[in-house]
Image: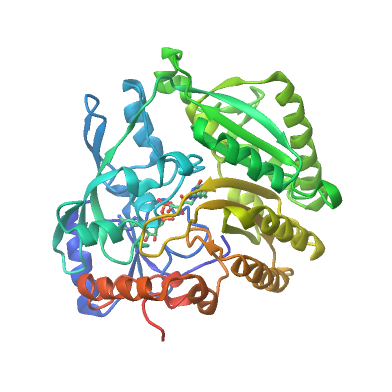
Length: 455
Ligand SMILES: Cc1cc2nc3c(=O)[nH]c(=O)nc-3n(C[C@H](O)[C@H](O)[C@H](O)COP(=O)(O)OP(=O)(O)OC[C@H]3O[C@@H](n4cnc5c(N)ncnc54)[C@H](O)[C@@H]3O)c2cc1C
């Protein structure tokens, strides 16, 4: 979240309008990038000097059948609208990210994961079929039995192969609108991987938080939150109003003002204090044991503070998320955190998760763990952050790790080439040449990393 672009911004509200824009862009030799909710940390939806199509006006739920748990939606439908549509019938999206402001189109294009990647796979595993408009205006119907190669690769295709216009999804039946959440204190990354590994076959969700400022023998200390759908739940929580996040903090401060409070603490002493408090309160909560929480409150923590990105202004932040095979992960995560601390760039937020290999042509996850480090970027420290990123990449590559383009803001084409399988990249480019021969769909990210060509 450090990138800017000057673009022609358009917001089509129908497929025919979309086809018209593609035709005009081809005629004028312009490039286009597609944008969902704009929640990528990098520049996948940006296209400096070209056009950006905001897809959020195509936001209708076209069909929802609670008898089978299948929904057909337009790409601009947000995860928020999706869960609000289905929760009353006892369903929940099978995979959700940390914010409900993500659109289904954006979730498909980056093949996002949730806190249950180890259990239910990534977003693509719950897509039954889709419609894709190519830049020639042709609509392709894609599923496991029709246009299968397009279906397979457009999920995780970074919005570069065509524009999704309809998506059919399988939702997950849940016993309750709440989950039983168990906080577990861990004293190191090795402890985290051991606990998560041990619990993965009996947990619906697992996510780790770590104190980014804890050093010496305390490095890696943190909390795992394990959550399970209860066998029997309270039907009241199938009510959308019960799920909603509170509109005020402590009944007084409106949520829309909270980013001001966050801004006040967004410096090293402030975040050291907050990380320390969170760890202490986690220890207290562990003693209290399992507690029930609404599904929205459990999943969408950052949505408690709307506009939280503003609190990082005037600079921004990068998230360095690495995916490392399970036997190497603990050591790599410890090395990365110690390195950030040594370079005096401690991460303000550290999150870990358990994953399996993702199946897209440009996969990011491995059978192992991920660690996401949020690092503040200012005008003054930007060069130092870039140097740090280069050093951290070396540690991850030495352990055969990978990166996630939804979160990347500073990778170089050389680094991209080091973890991406050459044959898969070639296959991606061949598909691109077939579906978008004039290369209309591009983004600042595709150009920075030379995804579409080596030049
Ligand atoms: C607070 C926060 C928490 C997050 N947590 C997670 C997490 O837990 N797991 C995870 O995996 N990710 C997470 N993310 C990242 C986020 O889920 C992804 O970046 C997601 O792709 C963003 O979707 P979006 O709708 O905001 O789309 P954008 O960011 O606007 O665009 C994302 C991509 O989708 C493409 N796209 C958009 N619409 C279409 C369309 N109609 N057809 C084809 N392509 C399209 C764009 O071209 C672009 O490549 C998080 C992000 C934030 C800000």
